[in-house]
Amino acid sequence: MLIEYIVGLSGLIAAGLFIYGLKAMSSPVTAVSGIVTAGYGMVFVVGATFLNLFNISPDARPHLLVNVALAVVALLLGCLWTGWRGRTVQMTAMPQMVAIFNGMGGGSAASLAAVSLLSDHATSGLHLSVTIVGALIGCISFTGSIIAWAKLDGRMRKPVRFGGQRIFNAALFLIALVLGALTVMQYATPQGVLPGILFFAAALLFGVCMTLPIGGADMPVVISLYNAFTGLAVGLEGYVMGNPALMIAGMVVGSAGTLLTALMAKAMNRSLTNVLFSNFGDTASSAKGPEGEMKSADPSDAATSMRYASSVIIVPGYGLAVAQAQQKLYEFVKMLVADGVDVKFAIHPVAGRMPGHMNVLLAEAGVPYDMICDMDDINDSFATTDVALIIGANDVVNPEALTDKSSPIYGMPILNAYKARQVFVIKRGSGTGYSGVQNPLFFQKNCTMVFGDAQAVLSKMVEAVKALGTA
Image (cartoon, rainbow, N blue to C red):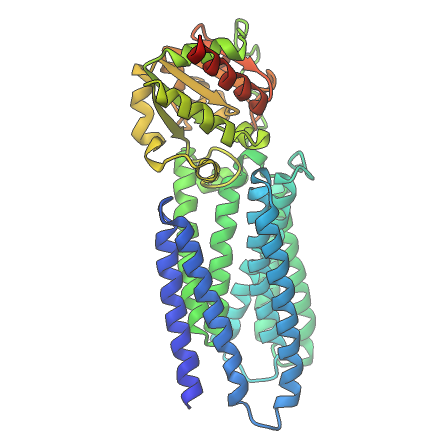
């Protein structure tokens, strides 16, 4: 009896640590401590679970010890692999790592559902229904996250689309629902096994088919959505197993993922159905494209302009992460600040390849949090700023989103970098952004391109500012 109380109390304590950790993760200042706190909660509840060994009858222990040994091996393998990946992953690979880790959570929830369905103990119709719903959501999150990982990792470079795809996907989802209902109705009968197997196959396949047509530019929203799916699936399976820690953790993660998904969709001024079913990026924004020519300058010229400016706003994008140039950028920024230049960073909610990607990137470089501003807080400042420096960003500063109703990104809120007195853009080439839409900002009179890898360009900028200081 004492062990049962301890195990139950451990779930409550762990849930409290999860909630506190998630709350702390809402601020860059406390994000690291929040992750550590939530991790302690997970270690605590996993450790307490093993106390159930002392509450098992002696006759059942030999069989249980085999499962415990397998669980320990799985924990060791999982901890070693994820710990190694977490320490060695490059910042450019962080989005796909988040996607695949999230998929593992969904797959675990689906596996719990499968084990519950295969167990011999009597189960109520409500528990069976909840188990099936959790399995469906977990399967979709599992295979959908794998496809998202493949897209982000460059293994699938183009969306897979074909005629009648939406009808096919809808039919597949309906088939999964029917098979799930048959599994519930025929549970514990010889005829109940086949519908269950077919249900899991249809659910896993639907996760793949649902994600294949979604463009890469929408992956941040998709990752957030599947995170919510995983949390919901875990919460449902926690209810089935009577595990308060799983229920609370799943509900917290699911609700947080849902809110984040809504915020991401709002930041793009698009509904979630539009993200999932609009074939974003299929159409060209303009038949003729922007008029004029791109002007280019040397890194030293751009650095000189910023050295003698009063204010500079920097817009980081995925190109900064690709070049691993965040440390060099902050070195450049510190030199400007030392010379009396007011420098701020402007972060678009969907910049990069996952929610908060740019915030993590700048935090890794040691940029103070008070220099980092959200879009709504800084957008009005561009009009009075001397220089806007854009590094590897494209779609989030594209004024076509405000003016061209035929553009696929029309209506998406952007950073108003085009309003600055002078705009410098560090970019490898003159190609389009991730959405496939050309940016007319690069052709404006107040915009100058600085072509090259961000790491190399910023290194030259640092040298130029140093030379000005010794001149």
